[in-house]
Amino acid sequence: MSCDGIRRDAERRVAELRARLIEWDVLGVYADDDGPGDENEYDDLIAPIMRWLGAGDDAPLLSARIVTLLRDDYGLDIPHKDAASPFASSLVRWWREANSNMDTAPSMSPAAGRGGAEIR
Image 1 (cartoon, rainbow, N blue to C red):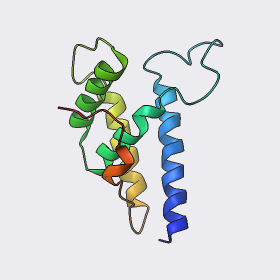
Image 2: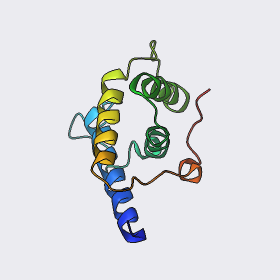
Image 3: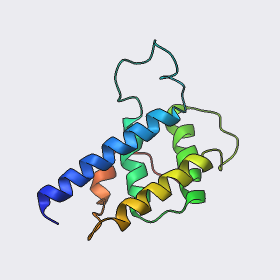
């Protein structure tokens, strides 16, 4: 795949993940007409989630990482590490399907996720 193809694929994946985060809308900011007015509310979650998916996280681990990120960065009180499990499962399926449709799957470099919260 050419550099332009890889860039287009990465841009498409970012856009798709952004749309999935907005649909999930864990904070409920898009639930009514008084939403934020843009589609960037969850953009800080994109790089870490793509990094974790690129590293091969399964749904339970991805759910635990997302919950920890939401606790640490958003201050949400989420009692169970599997609270994001249905969402994480859908992301893992989406990622695997996208990779199976490509000759060469792009990798997310560690630098792509700088600035995201690390999960301990």
